[in-house]
Amino acid sequence: MSEQIEVVRFPMQIGGKAHNPCGGEWIGSLNPATEEVWAMIPRAGAEDAEMAAAAAHEALRGAWAKLTPTQRGALMFRLADLLERDAELLAQLDARDNGKPISELRKQYAYLPQHWRYFGGLVDKLEAQVIPVDRNGVFNFTRHEPVGVVLAITPWNSPLVIASWKIAPALAAGCTTIVKPSEHASISTLHFAKLVAEAGFPAGVVNVVTGYGHEVGEALVAHAKVAKVSFTGGEAGGRAVSTLAAKHLKPTVMELGGKSPVIVFDDADLDRAVSTVAAGIFSSSGQSCVAGSRLLLQAGIYDEFLRRLIDRARAIVVGDPLSAETAMGPITTRAQFETIQSHLFDAHEQGAICAFKGDRSSSFPTGGLFLPPHIFTGVTPLMRVWREEVFGPVLAVMRFETEAEAVAIANDSPFGLAAGLWTRDLDRALRLHKELEAGTVWINSYRGVSSMTPLGGFKRSGFGRENGQEAVREFLQTKSVWMEYQ
Ligand code: TXE
Image 1 (tube, rainbow, N blue to C red):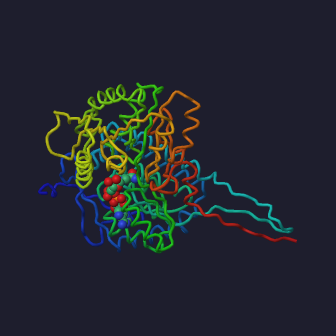
Image 2: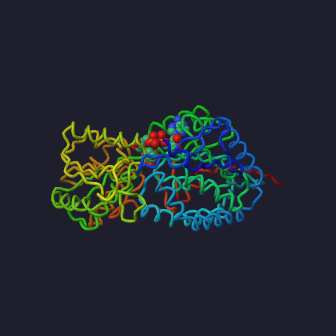
């Protein structure tokens, strides 16, 4: 803690200006690789929330609405250029703030400008309808209007990417925004807010307010000027936010994680499947909403697949997130680290067999929130490691015999975010993708995400969609206009 004197303070951005917390309090942001404070973020409260809501609301009917859609799109393109310019800086910030490996961050930030260009390109293509209503002398048409001020509440695992999944379509719809990033990883979003100002967006279009969920987060959710909330995070936070939003009759988009199954049939391309299954669970140290954390192997390939998967997992370098060779960095927060430890403890207690436990790179100094990859076999359907989201590098494996059995096991979960399917049999792929209860199904692939196609959950994984044109529709409301003539 003595290091705090050295660390940089990152102000919020409200109404186009740098803004320090009204209450004067700051939160230390920890580098999970060292568990030392490396930066300070504002601990915002109700007064800051009020200022952000006022700024966003003023811009909604004011400067933002006065621009033509094409002009709004042009600003989003300019922002994309700045994101391209600062991609390496943003990757470096996140690597320190949430511990994601730099190699993975560089890929994310190389793609992010394209995301902004996709939504910037949609702004002036939101066409509405002329409806031939069943009356004479009536001209009826629809308009798509922005829902209002959108609050984006984001988690720590991919802070700016997930914020962009929410803000870019909201801006494309003509909304203004307030982002409340996770208190554990706010820095890249705070830097992003500076780029928004540099791009020339009118003041108040994007505001970033940092602090704790139960403090400023709740103040923002309840605020009368906030029209809709888009949330990504855990089930407890999601339930608190959607309950509060419901109390104020506010709609929400919820992305709440999962326990996604990956089914590998005997006829699968094992080389591709093994490396993709490993990346699907161990990338980001398993701290990914779509992590493929339940592996179902058909009996004929079970032993061989497991052997190859263990070889693959053994080759994963766990260590310094800033090293280009690192494939797995630390767990982002101590609370999450301890949650994962409790899952590991319960897995052993409930009789699962730890078929593999990896090791961290010997070149990395001790300390930090590092956890190696774990693979459990001998898992049964009621075990916690099979049912609950671990959000860590922990894979649970089960054997199956038939197609019907695989689908039944896969669907026996309260979650429904994603599912993977490995087979060379086209008939089977076409049959089964419909059976799987998941918002995304990857066939002979896993974890592909694009700005252009919707992402979201079935069942308790959430509701509403991010990405694709559906994401813009989340932030539009339709007006029906009637004109009579003689
Ligand atoms: O997330 P939280 P946590 C899962 C994962 C993990 C668990 C908890 O299983 O173990 O969630 O993680 C804000 N009002 N995922 O506790 O609390 C909070 O400040 C307003 C899945 O870190 O859900 C942060 O900005 N805001 C996941 C955001 O919600 C509130 C990604 C997410 O934090 C709030 C991360 C409140 N009452 C964790 N409570 C995914 N879906 O990808 C919290 N927040």
